Image (tube, one colour):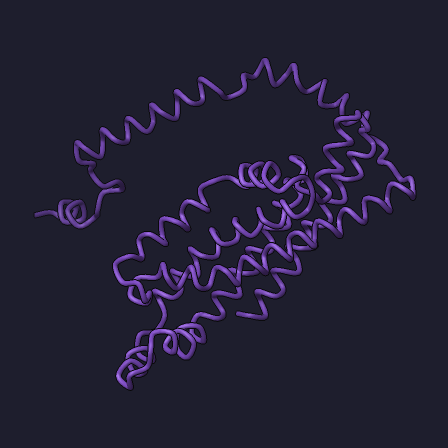
Length: 269
């Protein structure tokens, strides 16, 4: 046997050979992507026609509005946006802990019924923020309270999942030691699981807060308070310079929030 034959036998192929079922799934997925692109993707002609209108809109938005009275009102709306995000995240994180405990396999005190709580968390996470905001605006009324409730629900869906996964992956040694002494499930949770998963939970909480700040900006578009409500008013009244000022302020707020969250996560790590 030559050295070339040995090399060809030892060298693995670049791609694993697909089974007939996997090949059929890959072809179906490719066909779905192509059909979606052909149905809803913008055509080059439409993009080319829209660019001049986009340039015209940006020209009408410049220079940004600098009226002191407007800037003061916008500042209050930004503070309201932060208040919505912080209050909603804080309440949502507190409520996420018991929900995650009930949904965590091997840890939950409800045994096989954990799937009910996992399904509940999945349901909260699946429904979009704007849908929850519309529901709360219709039931509670316009304003920041509807925004806070939306952030609470969204946070439970987000943190509930990751808190539950962290609890399931917690070190089993301390849990088994406490169980051997006759400790209750709640005692095991408080003395073993939460201390072990606390860094992960803090990271998840910071991600949730960062997500809530971005979400609370958008929620105002449907009347749930915050700076988004001011942005919706500016566009509705064709006050494009004010809209540009609000967009720039939102950009600064989101970038600052991401920077602060990244620094806090680095300290936790």
